[in-house]
Image (cartoon, rainbow, N blue to C red; front, side, top):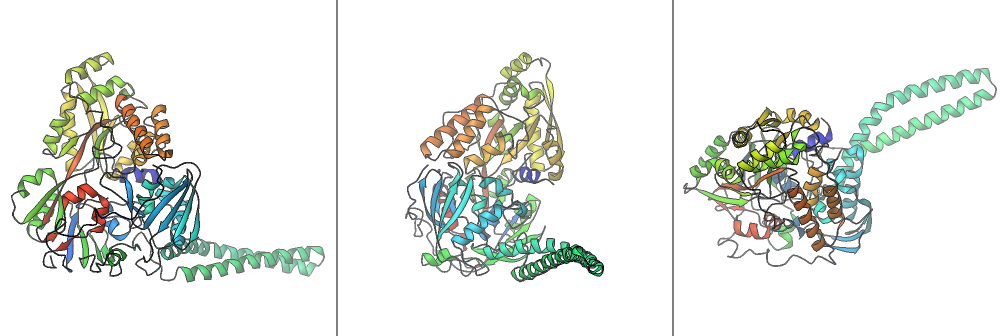
Length: 610
């Protein structure tokens, strides 16, 4: 499967509604100060009882996490990934990359240079140190094509990284890069042991050299035989043949020396896709791909010790079982076999009056939308795009399939996002206008549009609701329900007019805007090519001044909105259900302070056990 195809599917193509069970998861700044006391609250305002150590936290997900190197594919559970790997920077309550974590501070020296100071005293799970050298090595590892990191394109503006001292790096960019902080709070920012990465690279190179070794030995033998024959004949050719033989022997010796060196570096190596080495609260204990992943407490976690709370994290372990059926997940929670799950809106009524369960809605920074193919077919015409958009009753959709747990969407950035344009209102429901627009576009008797989406119960319910609304104005959405693997080909080949979609975890605005609206974006494949949109995306990516960036993204949303580039439907609300034995989940503070609060405030069991 092609890299872009995998990325597109991982970014959720086709209306796949995955509900995570924990909430996880930018201007020229002179310097970012140490964290303020506002989010560093552990008193009664945070929780009335003191944390207790112990117990295995048990959760469930419809899918296995996938690979455990965040730079490879597929990763289906970024929540668990965040417990293993920590980022340089975390997000605040407005989804901005402002919260220092493994990076203590950063300073723009000029538009293309950033000086970053790193936290001291951090060690990876294999005991190796986190430092300037490890950061430089990882970024260069990501940028090296042979390592197959999908995150490589996110680091395209990097020119070089300079180690200033053991815990200071200087970043040099090819051009101004306003999306830098957001990128360091995204996938490339997840830190991996340099020792493990070197072993990984050495293991890969060792396999290549071992394959070449036999051929090189055969080549040397042939050259040596020719040299022997030339020596018997004598003359100048003998010296030339011997020189060639000597060169071949040296090449073989160098290869054998390199193989010995690589064997030493890769000794005891285990693939990072299956055996991660991060610096987070938990480390891998055991796993059964497709069934479960189980982590154990990192006793040397730096953060708890740095604030005088060495018992952090409080759980002894963290296990996520794969349970595809949502009703089975809920039954397991009610029976005490699980400690927390994310529930579907349809299950809300079942759970809300259960005295043994805490139920906490959380407004997610996700987008549910419909992707339009403007390269060919009826959606090239803005009148058709407008007709589709005005035919959908967003309020009814939210209440019908989400039971009210959602907020109407106006464009790509959620309502609580720092780049959301507050002047844009959701497209109005106006079926009569839709019929008028269709007639003007040459479809007075209606039309049929092709569609693709995922073959899941949630995606089917969503799609049927859309079909019903469109049918009332004469639009038939002919949808093919496909497996995740089957979605790739029709999407890449633009064999659709409108596809269902969901984009999770919208933080750095450049990520979603680039993915959706640049010709080489991983969710584009040439489906649209608006020059004004592309120019604004490039401007937003480069702009360092935060106030100017916000204006650019407000304008970007307006252009997307005015051109009906896609059908923006709603921002969902996640429903987190947990046993009342789980303590420390202060939803109000999570909403206020965001990811940094979650990362710094681990949960615990009331009695130190499930």
